[in-house]
Structures are given as C-alpha cells and as structure tokens.
Image (tube, rainbow, N blue to C red; front, top):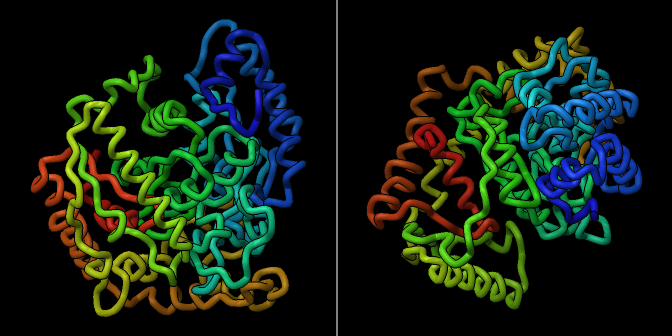
Length: 451
C-alpha cells in the first residue's frame, strides 16, 4: 500500500486484518517526513520513542476494542494547537519567539484526537500566526518552518507569482495539507478564519470540511486564533469517508461508517444550486490562469453538474450570490477589521496558557522580533507590519462596535446572501469553484451557519 495514495480507512482495514501495525505505520510515515523534509510542511516531529510507545499501546488495545474508526491512525496537526510536554513537541505558531514554547496541558482538540486513538506524528507548518505577521508575507511561510512547498510543484515558488498564484500551497493550514498530500499522514487538522482550510486542501488535491464555528467552540480553546468570531477547525483527507470519520471525532459523535452510497442514486432527490463559474473565479491579479486552463476548469465543473444530475440530483444553475465587495465597510474587509481589533487580546490569552512563555503579549513579541530580526523576520519577508497594526488597532473598536460589524457581515453574507439563495431557489446545497472567493462569503456568514 502506497503512503501517497492510501486513505485512512484502507489503512484501518489493513490494521484490522493484521497486515500491518500502528507501529509500522508510524515508522513508515516518519521516514517519509524525513525523506521529503525539503517541502517544509512539518515544523516538529514527535520523538520516535514517544510515538512507538503510543503505537504499541494502541496495537495491544486493538485485539479487544477500538477507540474509534481511526484507532491507531497517524495525523499531522497545525502548529497552533497546544500540546503538553508528554508529546515532545513545542507549540510555535511558526514564530521564532516561540521556538521552545511548551503548553502546560493539551488543548481540548488534542485530547479529543488522542482519546479517539489517533497518533500525532508531527505539527504542520503554517502562515506565521495564521497569516498575521506581515501584509506581504507569502502563504505557508513562517520564520521557523520556512516556506511550505507544494509536492506537485517540482521547482520552488515562482518569485513573480501572485499571493494565491499557482505555485503557492495556499494558507494558512498549508503544512497539514501538504503533509497529507505528500504521505506524511492520511489526515491533517487545521484551522480556518477565511479559506485557511479550503484553499490549501484544494491546492493539495484533498477533501476538507470546516466545522461550523458554534459546533467547534469547545475545541477552539488552547489554540492560537485570529478571531473569536470567525475561527474554526477542520480536517483535510484523501477521501470523503475519512473526512466524515474525523469530523465525527472532532464533534464528539459516535462512530458511523456505513456502506458508501451507490453512484447510481447518490444524489437522489437532493436539491443543489450551482453558481456561475465564469462569475465566481479568481481574478488574474489573485491567480492567473491560462485561457485553456480556465476553459478546462469550467468544462470539469459542468461535467460535475451533469454527473450529479444523472445521480438523481435536482439541479439549479446560475444561483445569484452577493459579490465579496459587499463584505467591506469603510474600505476595509469586515473579517480583517474585527480580527485586527481583537487579536492582541487573543494573543495574550493564548500566551498565558503556555508554560513560562518567552513573550507575554503583543508588545513583547514585537520587541523580541526587533531584537532578533535575523530569526524573526528573515527574507523574503523582513517585516512585522501586521503585528504593529494589530497592536495599534487593539482599541479601535469597542466590543459592542465589533459585534455590530460582525452582525453587519452576517446580514450581508447570510441573510441577504447564502440563506436567501437557498430559499429563493429551494435548494439544500450551494456549490461553486474552490478556486474562487466563495469561501470568503461563507466565512463572513459564520454566525448563522449552525449546522
């Protein structure tokens, strides 16, 4: 079985049949991480002795019971989730100032993964502080982990490429996404403010699902967040079956792994609305595509519509949604305005959960970076203008004003956008190209999407 192509459920079948062990899987995945370390997808690997001890215990348990359908399966998590010293890895957020930072205890998400029998083999690289260090910082770049590279791009990033250009791995959960695509683990766990799961998963050829914010609230403590309003967690996998299984773990739901639906009736009676791919696509200044490539993407999109219709779906095309320009207020993105105004406080709360943190607040972080520029702000991004902006914006909005701004975004994105489209077209699902800003509309509607 190939590390690159095998989903978790097939590894589980092999484990159940005695064809392999969790110990053998751990050893194989760690070797793969070491072999492809030039991808810069992983910031830290758990010590092998710790991993083998965990694997041995789970192999022994297998003969009598399974903790979940992912019992004994390795996973890579984004390096924003706090882990205690017993797992042998720091929690850095990609920042040089936190290179040796260790949590006092595991965050709830880590405990949930361990309780389900998953083995955390490493912590994935990311856009430093989930993208909030410098305005022009590349996606997937951190001062500790370097530039995350796509396993599908033979050369390094194109220096002339745009922010979401074709050679970029996406961000900020790029490390876990590339880890799954490159065979470091069959499952990756990341976080999302506005596209940080969907974009890197799409670039890595994976499936992903962002858990609704309200449903993930209990798991959002003990992780570095950009926004208390918009941040959530989610998984990236090689198969929809794996995605369902890991999402059930994240939500604390019981195991359920029934037979897959037949392709002949998979969408029978399901009402699906599709946006126009010619309208919902990246502009050339965001991601340039050759005309032939754009044409192929539209053809593939329409082919997917035809297949769903043949499988019994009731299809509505050209569903109207408000443009992302409506999600601006006074010339600023609603999501970014709320995030910048509260991030200093969120950072302080996060740092307080670490054991003897080297910095305690945003002021000390900025000062540390200024004192260690070669470590904290190396090329190609020798800057921390976003951190300075977040510091200076800490008192720009009162809590009530921030809530009003959030409610405005929710009204425009959900009440006058997603929910209106669902009702007007009598559909249950909205579909659009992953290579578009549709994710931003969904992110801004986060309060109302309680599913």
